[in-house]
Length: 87
Image (cartoon, rainbow, N blue to C red; front, side, top):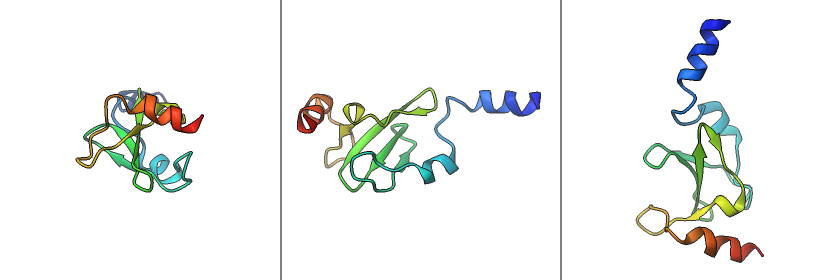
C-alpha cells in the first residue's frame, strides 16, 4: 500500500491519468477532451478551448479556459475574452 502511494505521488505532477482523461468532458460543449502533453492541458476541439492542469488537477472552470488560436497555442488574453462571452 505504501509503495503504491509513493508511486502515485511521484507521478502526481506529470500530466493526467489516461482513464480520467477519457471520462472528462468539456463543461461548455459536453464533448470529449484531448490531453496535450506540450501544453499540459485538456483541449476541447469542438469549441477550441484549452483547460490547464495544475498539480495534476484539471481546472475545468469555464473562466480558466483559454481560446486556442489557429496555431494551437492559447491566446494570452483569451481568459478575459472567454469569461466575458459567458456573462
